[in-house]
Length: 188
Image 1: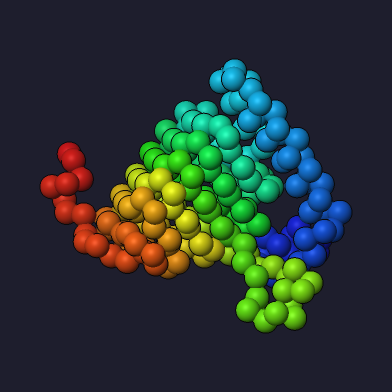
Image 2: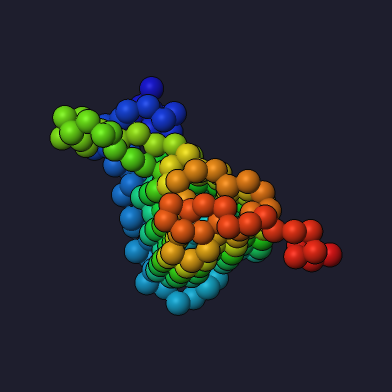
């Protein structure tokens, strides 16, 4: 098993291995071209090369940052505003019709509480899932292992450390349930 495969499996891995560095360097080269381009068609083509999968109906504004790209999947008609950062050592899956505010950060990677393990930069990763029709306000942090349920809303400046059920309004640091979103608020 390569170090990249270990990372995707959620095991401890060597972040400086050749298998990981190749994917990381490819992403860095593509991101430089994406963030330096003003041609939407060209940027879309580059995003298709960068991402694991991304619907052509989705839009990501620059600048955009990630470490690997190949671990990210973005559904249809999804919009990511500027200055999004994704630490994508595990899969980050974003559904259809999702709105993500500027300066939002997705952290699938974390480090051990044991300082001795941190000395060697030991890292473990867990996936992040954002289901369909979610709205994430600006300056939100979504931490590893979190699933945000369909049609939920995350208030600006929140830090999401645990799963969010569908049809919920969450906010704060750490994010907590503010209230359920009722059927009459969901539209027709």
